[in-house]
Image (tube, rainbow, N blue to C red):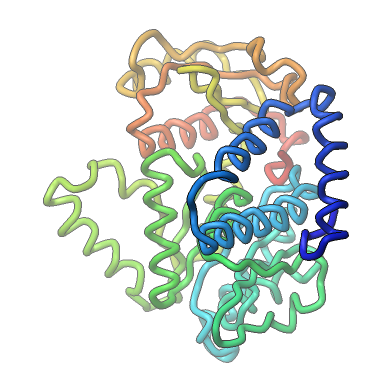
Length: 355
């Protein structure tokens, strides 16, 4: 389809729209397409400004690029790497970021970076362009892509930070943060906030220091001294993240998280945890005993796919179903870690990088 910038383009748009509307009834997700079209139709006669339309249009175009980019890779797990664009390649932390990305790529994961210099370049260099993505941002001053992702089909540029962040988080199965400036801290706290509120994940978040640095430990101390002590976060919230200067541990935290746990979704008020293998009754009894505080009612029960999930690509996977209180995300992460620890597992089936 074309962008309507002339009379002929407008005529083509009318034809394309008519074709889409004619096919709507046969589309698998037609109710969402109908909702999207309805939003635009409600706005069309409204008294809104040109800038409003520019924001709406550019946002949709950003999301279109992101959806098209990631769709072919939807079954491969990915790690988003955040960190300073100013880190020189000769600094130890650059080498750590490169090594981390390489190790995750060797484990079958793909890497997502902001496509810039510094830690972002280290991530693309370590994973290689074939195992990495670059999500660039259009800035008033030119931010070119780093040499390790430049020219690759998995490099795209966003107009808005918020749409760029959407895809960093929507597409990632883990987040690794290296030291950085305002932008990195913004990404760190947005990741923590969305994890805490259940808008991201469940997924592991790892803060990586170089040996001898207290960069992330000092942030953790601030969180514990001011936020936790003043009751501004829950006692379990610091368990949302891991701080380490050991790359083996950083990789293991991510790798282990998908050892038994696969993914989750809501069906009504029920949280459905999809697993790679069924849990024995003794483990389910343990979970009900130790994590009863997560429930609004009932118990954690084993299940097959619910009726609303039939036809889903994960239909064959065993499940746990619970009425989750939707406020204790840190405790939910603790339970998933315990499931991965206690769940019986056939080593030959271990492919945490698949989803």
